[in-house]
Image 1 (cartoon, helix red, strand yellow):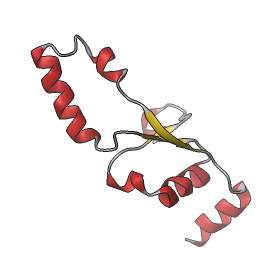
Image 2 (cartoon, one colour):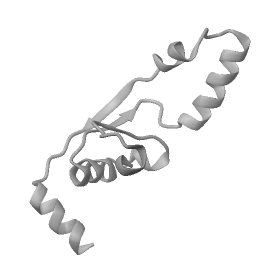
Image 3 (spheres, helix red, strand yellow):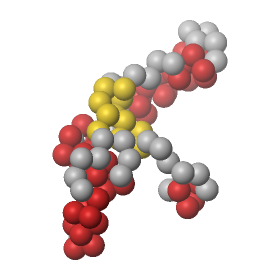
Length: 92
């Protein structure tokens, strides 16, 4: 993602069904060496559709207001040793 975007990631924001797996999110944090931020509302596709409808009818004035609705439910921080994660990744 960093190579494609040309930007350095400081946090990985996740959503969707797989994001409810604590084990998967912790593994992501460990392997990527980044915090993983899971929101309270993990079904962001449905929320996005509702937010756009709300913008269209004036519930919110702009995208900044909609963006302020996002709340983090949990941050997964890297916990395992980097060398251990690299060895596991190499084995995989």
